[in-house]
Image (cartoon, rainbow, N blue to C red; front, side, top):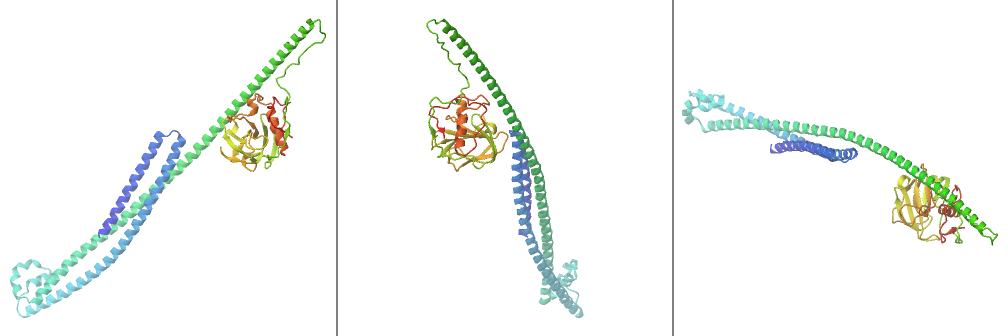
Length: 453
């Protein structure tokens, strides 16, 4: 009976814990909504809290199931005890019946002998009211008769106690089983409710992520438009500077011609050719061509390789892995100044261009990290045939995301540069197709820069 009470108490405690857990989850969600920095963070916090709630409720269901099984075991034990009590009741009733027959037999003997019924006979007949009047008959009762009456009284009292115990056990066991089923149903309903809220929160997260990606795409388009406008403005400024330089050269030539006419003792007119702001790519003291045998074609595994223009570097498009041209160390992977934000740069540590920096930027998914050592068999990233394709060439040694062509003042937005053309020649020497010139390359490479045979 004590075990049944304990099982019933455990079910009450579990029900209280479940209700308090749901209240706690509600407070957590409300707090997250109040302090969250954005709707997406709020929705993600709700998903995490609901997931934890469902896990906790499932643990409670397991605990309820275990308690219910224990209750069922207690019920089976109680049923065994009830069966034993029924057996004991039947035995007592048979004992009482035997005692009644024995008492009646004794009373009949006394009656035959001319005596009245004794007090214990009234007890056996269920009429104790006349007991005080017949106490005097106790002296006439034999020891056997008295013993029979006492046994009868004891059996009757034990029968009443046993019946009360049976009723109490049945009531407590029935209440415990009902409470266990009710509590488990309540927790299962809480799980169903939490799962519905989790599904709604997950949908909200997906919607907000999609909105965020759309906003990022719009921002990227706007940034690209601003960059294109800035490049166009740079082109226009370069054209204006070139026109001004040509005008200045023309004025200088006219002045020199006028001065020459005033010299009477010389018949040779000395003039200087006008300077140009866009010299043809000819180094004044070019380095002798070197072999690129220490390097390998970085585009050898690109599928559908499309050759595009030479500008700061060389532009390509297609699909596939991009390798390092030789041994080196990665110095950069991302830079926000480039489309898609990818700018992989590495410093060569061997070969004719040892110490110089190479970059691969734009539509490439990086596969390396800063500080990583690479070789000609290392995949730097994967070209995914994006809108911008890739650009690869000589990077600025400062590691700030710029190129040698830009820091040398050779690039105005759409023109071919000397450093871009030099890198195109390197790629051609390695077996890759060279880029397409959009005119004579602007500027010169440094006098000690390697030239490729």
